[in-house]
Length: 260
Image 1 (cartoon, rainbow, N blue to C red):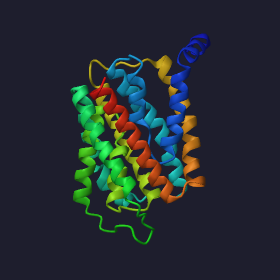
Image 2: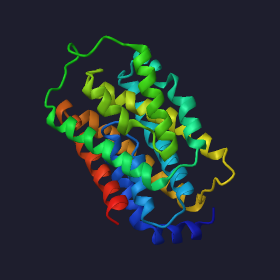
Image 3: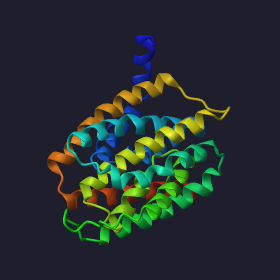
Image 4: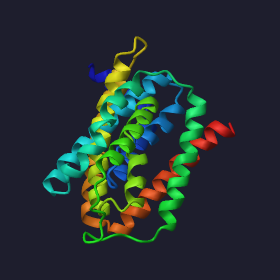
């Protein structure tokens, strides 16, 4: 890529770069990739929707890859509990990525669902400790939840962590930091599957001049955010931060697709 083209792209899209950097820091700090907010930001630019979804998923992959590596080092991943969640989600995320959907209807449904999840998490003040976590794995139920979330995530172009994390919190699935670690892995595998599904469509398109800059931006932001979560955030702060982020995204989506 020509240096002059890169420089011109940075000057033209400086506000996008700044927003993506901020989103990557905030979302990675609670185990998310930020795909839902990347979608909301890119929707304001006039970029075609198919390209928006692909760019958001690529940024997801970059951010949560760093998160997963960091959580592996911290030994926060329980693969025995995690496998049922991703068993059906990966193939269904691929199928969801291949589908063509009604953009307006789905985003309204997405906004309502996320707002409900955010309110429920905020009013629930109970934070479980490592001794209080739910040890009843129920693999069939977890596989069903994971499959449904994976399918929906593949359709809209997110990793699904913003759906999965509230569900795991409400069911006392594990401690908040282990939920954040699990959400990171879930987002990673489903983002890859959803992107492959989109890539298989003949109308797949992406602007690598802009996308490559955004990928570098979110990688740096994601590295900062994942370390902030371990060093500065308590479990209650993680839960509250998750609720705030989900509420922000839901209100932004509803405002755009209901009132504008």
